[in-house]
Amino acid sequence: MKLEHTIPSLQVSDPDTLDDSSDFIAAKTERHTPDQAVLDRKMQEAAQQLLNATGYQILNRAEVHVDGGAVRLSGLVRRYYHKAVATTAILKLDGVTDLKNELQVSAR
Image (cartoon, rainbow, N blue to C red; front, side, top):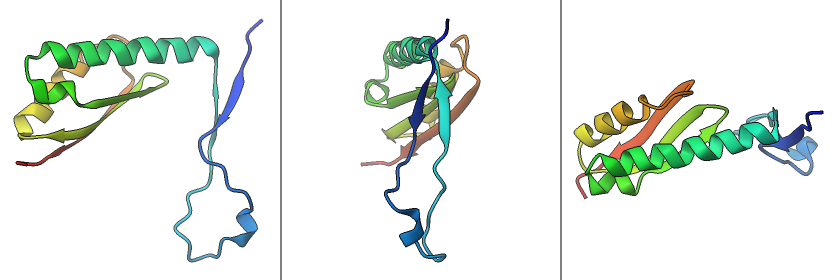
C-alpha cells in the first residue's frame, strides 16, 4: 500500500481578497510519495558531493534543490566557467529529469 502526501507549494488564506492586478501565481498542489522524498534527498546529497568534488570552493556554497528528479541550483559564483562546471557535474547524476542552473555570476 502506497501512502501519498499532498504538499501545497503555496497557501493563501483568502484568495478572494486578491485583486486582478496582483502578481499572483495560483497555488499548485503536487503529490509526492515518501519514496520520492527519499530519492530527492539522496540526489541532493549526491549533487552536493559532485559540486564539492570539482575542486572549486565557490561551488561548495551552491544551493541544490531537488523535486521529483528536477534539480535547481542557486547561489553566487565568480565566473561563468564555474556555472558551466556545475552544470556538467550535475548532468552526470543518474535520474536527473531537468536542470535549472540559476547560479548568478558576480565578481564580488
